[in-house]
Length: 362
Image (cartoon, rainbow, N blue to C red):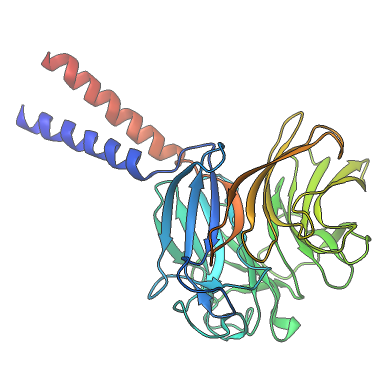
């Protein structure tokens, strides 16, 4: 009987720990740069992942990313950094960062290794896919890091554009370059790896599949409005709608909605989100009337906003969910990760066994 009781107590403890630390499915995760104590600049800044409910100001928890040792930091004022992206299988979040302590001067122009930060559904953080042993992003910014659940890709710039672009990694060893250039956000949509760029012909580009070696992307659509600044993007599961976060010129900034008709993408309209600053990061809850969650691009006190796309620029609405505190900024945003199917099955089995034990003990 004692063995059964110990097992039951262990299962109950596991459940309690999970409830205290795990993300809540459906909530938002936002990458925060800065701890509020030091003004943000070009030096490395500490990072946090904030979990928000969908009611304005409803902070659920804040996860501290180590800023020394095996942790990661980001440049406090480097605007193209800090994308936060849910893995294709939905079980963890990723972002790119620098393997250097907070306070490291000129971190984005340094040669310190870049790496991928991973946060699972329990809020546990780890570092993988280091650029050590390569020139990937040397002297430039690491804009985003993504995963299909198995491999990792980082996008960004380098002092020598030949060392920028997109690099892939299995999580161990030196990464492999997929494509060179000065790129911004990367994302996997419907099984295809894509990215945005503000250089050359600005817009959204896409590879066929998810290459782990040298490959050439095709233009999905070019953004031709004056002074475009495309950053994060999201493509619908049916491949016919795309939203792009933009912090460029007056006719470009905000959230752009693009539609695909027989392989030809056209700009449907622009949602004036973020005022004179525009937006940099976004994620989308797809449906008949998609809901966009974005971070705005103000240099201070930027915001996490919820945008209801009601079918036209005039009828769509914007609600501020939270505003960054002094000496902090919000960067990437995506949905909270969910447990791996095997974890759910094990927990369900354990809870069922605990219930059976209780029935037999009454």
